[in-house]
Image 1 (cartoon, one colour):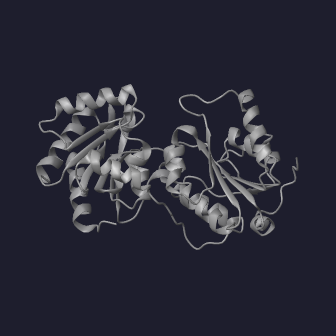
Image 2: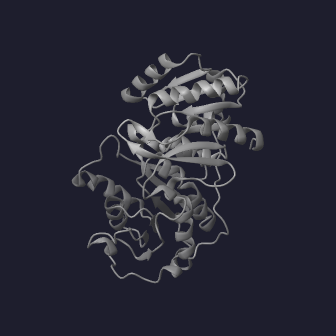
Image 3: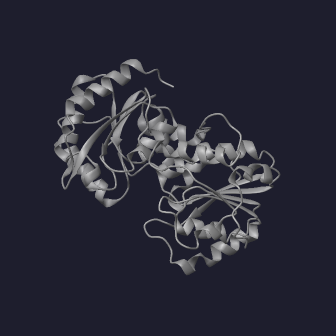
Length: 350
């Protein structure tokens, strides 16, 4: 394996005739959605190549929105990833695929090792924020450096590819929702769209509004926008389903639809895309809304990496709270509702 690191700006010029290319990233739903602009750069840069992507196994379905990807590989990260020796078979399959190019822009140890042992002649990596372990440089033929925590993660990845010589003037999301998923949602939702979509829960209590405030937000939305249907969704795990049951018991009205884990990722994507506004915490629903150009009102906790995941622009409104053991503190319900009112009155449906 070559360990010499070459000038990164030459990467695309040296690889433009590649016939088999992989973008390797083991992130979860938000990470995978924010891979789409980088994947589109690769698709346009290597029009003749077979384009592959590797993401976490439980979110591979989201990649079906990009039919121009030739093969989707799943990596078993959820609920627990494999031991290092359990990757031997996966490494053999990577090597058997005979990739010319593997690109890995997240820099984690496991993904870097898979890249380094893939057998690809050309391997582009993004240096981790902490520089990476001692072996890290040996995993790549070219290394790109770009600041972390400065802008949306998809924009950071686009800048990395630009520094590696790839063409393109702006980040672009090219996606196509499969028609069966759209038909399924129309049947399940019983409406043609335009609803308020609320995803009240995240992976941790401290990233959510307190339960009583969530109920208050929903009640005020219902009273202020009586003509707007409200759809609630949550994940299929027992924690979120239990929290959804408690939330519904606290409401003084019946939401139009409640999907407590019954939707697959593509159906959730359609629910969000057909909304007039998405509300929720820092979770996958936000990133599906970003991908489909749907207005968002999002509550975040204050933390160092916020810029990586906080969309900005006229479609997006954010509220920053302080982390506590019972949820986010310091966010006013009236401010949330006023933000929704502004967005649905000024934003065209896209």
